[in-house]
Amino acid sequence: MNATVRVSVVALLCLAAAACAKKQEVKSTPPPEAPTATAPATTEGAFTPADLQSNACLRTRVIYFDFDKSEIQSQFNDIVACHAKYLRDRPMARMTIEGNTDERGTREYNLGLGERRGNALASALEAAGASASQIKVVSYGEERPVCREHNEGCWHQNRRDNIVYTAE
Image (cartoon, helix red, strand yellow):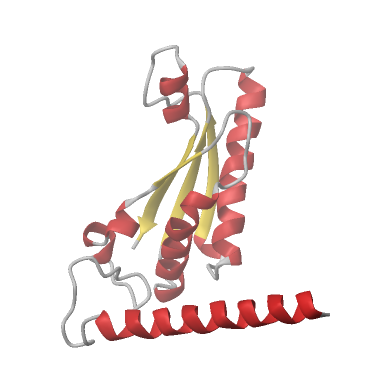
């Protein structure tokens, strides 16, 4: 019992210290009327078509995949959320997701894998609030490589989904 009480007291002190640290962080941030250059514009206001060229998140239109995988990596979650918000803000916007693979595997397998990758991105966008009617998936398999060398660095560049806005 004595050890339990000591652990509880230490845990409470840690929580109190963390709360104080958070209060200090809030005090050190600039007031809302003084914007910072690094502030992301992904959650404030509605996106406009001009944001497709000016917003860094929306300009990122390639999602990469691991070898023989079709799961969206967590490092791309912010990009997915950003594009989903754009689609929510712009109901008339339309996108095509182009699924691509590297050269390894048969043509049929790569077309299927490209489609699975495109569908995985479409599902992630829909889960983040985009409408399925705004998204079209096309698989190109290995037919549209961005790199033609035969090494892992090049193959990684070809394992991707491209986001193409067809109506802004």
